[in-house]
Length: 516
Image 1 (cartoon, rainbow, N blue to C red):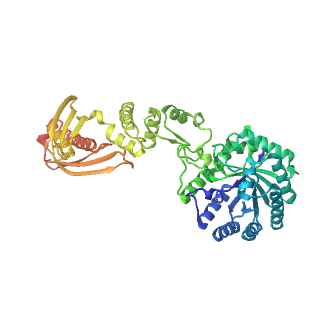
Image 2 (image 1 turned 45 degrees about the vertical axis):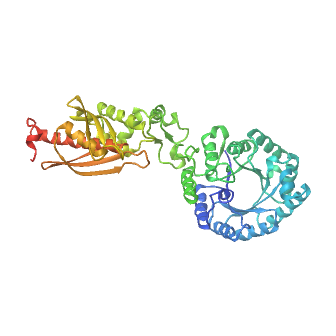
Image 3 (image 1 turned 135 degrees about the vertical axis):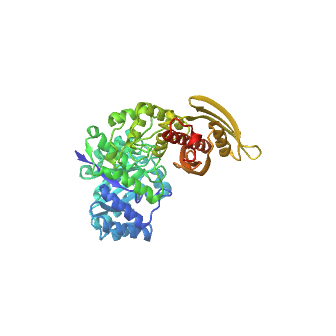
């Protein structure tokens, strides 16, 4: 299979994205990871732009050995000289020169005539060629340039010594069909086109950067310029991870390969996010948090049976440990059962049904169910159906100008009991009412509340300690409503008191064994 060269410009074009500026040390750290990832070329920066960028390009060139390191240069002699100076001690390096070629850019930005652009190109490419054989030439805004002029401009660059011709879709304007036609024409008409490598640099303003890049490859381009996470000017560049995995996953269709170590894709994405502080959106292809996440019950069931049902690549192939079956209101019994087993719990069908019922109730309240939530559901719920006291409903009235009142509906020995009571606060009112309903006289010795997971919709876990004439036990309850969690914890403690008393003397009422 033919190899597609991957030219990474995260450190140059990517850094120009607002909020993605990096220090020299951070750039070097990312360059090391790019080399580990296996990119063919690293565009380290714009050496002539500042002393800091010069030093950054220099240090990267001196350390990186496997990938080629290049510096971007305008068609200005000083830019070429500074780029060469920064990289002269590098192990493997080149220069990337560029000039605008569209009528719009030539007239309003460069204020140059086409003939002047041709002369500047020849002069600077020849100058760059004196320093290195690895010279790339880019025609900025190529996709809005006159095709005839592009053929002429690229031909002059080849005659001057360029070995890579880059066709940038600078403002993300073109479409895949247009890109295919343009590359095909250039490869047919540019001087000695068969002796050079055609490259593309696509921006994502219309969301077609990856599609345009792949269209160019199908037409004959053999280098793609891209960035990690697709960062870059405005809407960003073609995303390296999407391009590489498209080639890998659809290899029978494209018949190409890259030298990328795909298992390093996710680590590279995470490192860039950590350095810049800019995270990828959850639904980002390949590296987004949802890329290998499944919440729908039908999807989860399919993935558990065979991951190929809903995954066209394995998470391990891009450096992610495993798929993430996100538990939420759309999840089914199979996913819940599988996750509970992973947590180390063995439930029978009756217990699983009980937990599934509570899980669905909680999922209607919370956006996502975490492992800690499941542990709480299993711990507090699997034996609920055997308890003497069961909470069915709890309603609280409380505020600054009313007496806290609790209305409680419970099942006691299978029979429904209703009662209302008062207290100093909502929790006190609830617990006082429950105490009166059960007839168990005990003292609350401790009351602890903690959040099981983060977020405002987190479950709160309440732990209460009770003492009945020397018999001390702890009860726990979990719910998104702290008052309900408190009632559940208190009832759990009362059930444990009842069970302890029955274990001591099954025939003796609880009040008679108090104090043992």
